[in-house]
Length: 319
Ligand SMILES: Cc1cc2nc3c(=O)[nH]c(=O)nc-3n(C[C@H](O)[C@H](O)[C@H](O)COP(=O)(O)OP(=O)(O)OC[C@H]3O[C@@H](n4cnc5c(N)ncnc54)[C@H](O)[C@@H]3O)c2cc1C
Image 1 (cartoon, rainbow, N blue to C red):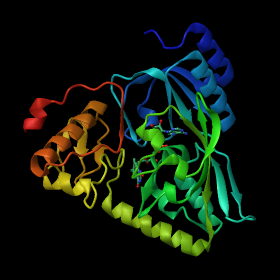
Image 2: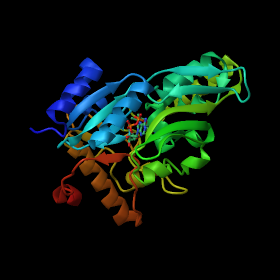
Image 3: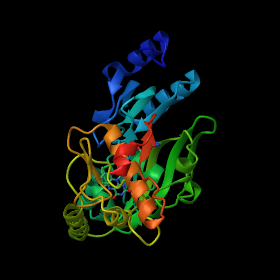
Image 4: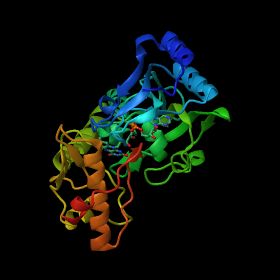
């Protein structure tokens, strides 16, 4: 199969990244749902300086590409994508406890939960809610990740962002025009790369911070299913819950192929290890149709669909 990259570009990326550059890679192992077809190439990046270099090169060559953190909010089509995918594993973290406000600078590939646990060890508060969000800082800043009544918007001091035309610039939370699980960049599908972020923290005690984290984790474990998934598939409508609507439409436990609308939490669609991306996609179409028919409400996806999708399976929608 022909790649979006030509032979010279493949050679150059190989020289720059060594074994961290690979062609025709199935993306399932880079998403938390463990499904999806292949990308023409994958570049694994370990620091934000390499992230900047590779993105700038791909923009100069006019090669379509996208960045994944942990792939915990993306459903990639089984047909794959004719693009390069950058897997962001940049991981530098620096706590600043000497100045006001207390803050932490973090590269965008850092796992949000591990950042929260490191803050807790220092008795620093502000990231407790992040502990169980399985994405990276970059994914969280891009999509305004949130839980337990808090979100990224409330703690972000600055994010350094690379843009193909405007170059590198720092953005405050206000500059991001955040909304519920959304930023202006996400809404406008802008091809930006979040390089790093600085979050505001507060002095507390390790005991208090870890206590709150444990309480949140306990709540999560008792309400959400284990197994491969993308977390909540749909945004909650104002004043209601997508899970409640899907459950009330009678869909809890419904299966298509190897994917199931969780019996524990109807907004989680779980891969039982044999699911295809299309199985999960068809469940989203079923949930949308049933909620529209029963409650005249249009569910809006929280996850991002990537690639091309078959038309909804009419037999499944009628059952
Ligand atoms: C079990 C489970 C529980 C979850 N619980 C929550 C929850 O409580 N709250 C919540 O908000 N979400 C939750 N999620 C969803 C998900 O973890 C978040 O949306 C997370 O912020 C996505 O981060 P990621 O690194 O995985 O992003 P990805 O899924 O890799 O990417 C998502 C989008 O962000 C873009 N992106 C990623 N990194 C960058 C970057 N550096 N620069 C520019 N764009 C970037 C990608 O291109 C893509 O468009 C859950 C998911 C799972 C599987």
